[in-house]
Amino acid sequence: MSLRVAFDLEETDLEYFRSIIRRAGTSASKTSEEEVVAHAEAMINEVKAAELPAFAAQRIDRVGGLIDMLQDDEWKLAGNERNNVVTALAYFADPKDVIPDDVPVLGYIDDAIMIELILRELKHEIEAFDDFRRYQREEASRNRDPNLTREDWLAAKRRELHQRMRRRRNSRSPRASGRTRVRLF
Image (cartoon, rainbow, N blue to C red; front, side, top):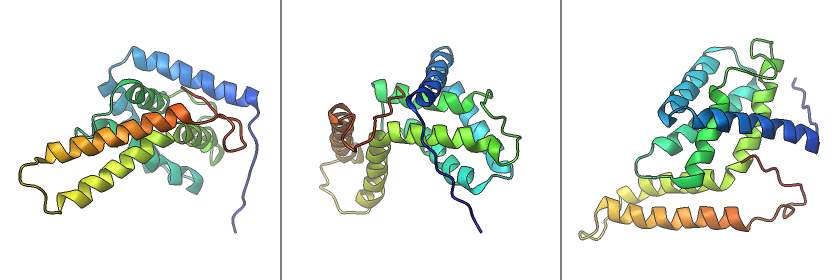
């Protein structure tokens, strides 16, 4: 038997999470990207080694996807998008938690909420990266124009997806879905 728990976060609740992200951004700006990634990877490994409640386990792998986005040399994420991903990872690298993770079951609720908020905020970046990875796998096996190098055809796809990502981020309406837009970055 499972139990589904649903609740609404009010604007003041969301502001609390925004303040945490701002603090993580400040921390990230004082730390190298490599250190932030290393700390986030360590946190993921530590959490995976623990006995996780299912709701946390279902989300933690998605944080690893953010690391992959930064480390994929062919994706070449840059600018504000890269800074936003590093800031998101800085939150997970921070050992300070609203609810300490060693509190059985409940210790991961704040992390699960933050993961959901961050994934929503970085939705367009994640979708574009997922499409790029799919393209890397599928196109590598196709016969291509011998005059085009792998970098040539990947660069064209990368430009297309980066433009789409930025266009979607810039054009989204705060109330397009009928819900209040959650801005973390």
